[in-house]
Image 1 (cartoon, one colour):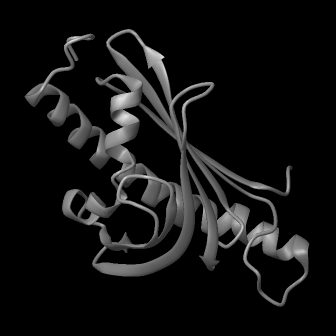
Image 2 (cartoon, one colour):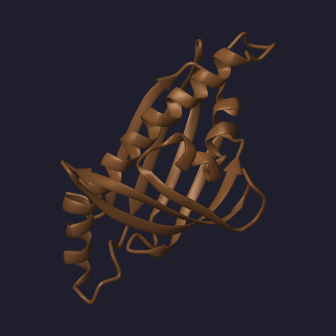
Length: 172
């Protein structure tokens, strides 16, 4: 078994890849669009662009809403496909890499969110134990679950935006 934590969330979104990426990059609006996001605060850079952001969400466990927080450096890439990248630089998940990739497909795009984390939390424990905690608990129970809700919610936002004002080039 690989020691690295990896989670992948994916779904089809009926929107052009670059347009979907540009809407998703408006992270400051995520709390408005996503009920599980408590807040997003931009610490550096312009809205919707590269910079540093603090993000806070909740992971529901029945009636319990477990709060989580992290700080990320974010940037946008256009090649090989439109992408939104994050590197966690604060919080329990410091060191985690996140890639939102928007792959062209007929009628829209396949959006993938890949989380990768080599070392796990920076707790005073042996590295192998930190990696196991990340791979067996933090990844599947927190990261994957929050990313699934985020992707589903943002897919609805992107598709509604494209339906309300279709792109002239694509009709989407």
